[in-house]
Image 1: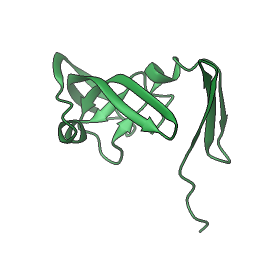
Image 2: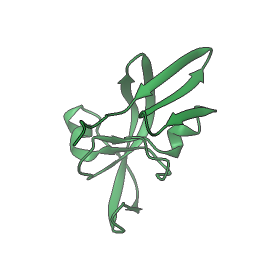
Image 3: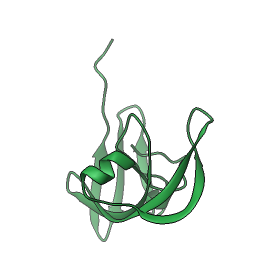
Image 4: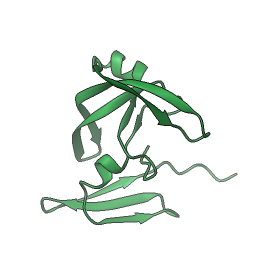
Length: 112
């Protein structure tokens, strides 16, 4: 999930462990989540590799017990992209890095 409201990148703690990205201890802090609550974060995973089509990312992510998604890419990642074109109706985002244009397409639910 791409979330411009998240300051950092997060990975589901269980998914991180399943993929052998074991969190390195960090000073415990609270992460505010969408429902207004907070959860505790006590670890950071380095060199997490993510492939999205032709785009490959290696980044640091905080491991937290989140539900519903495996990864949240926040401003920590978005600010590395420079200019971004987003189309919320057609569910895509485009950016250019090192001369290569990328387009990431989101999930489009079937019509109800």
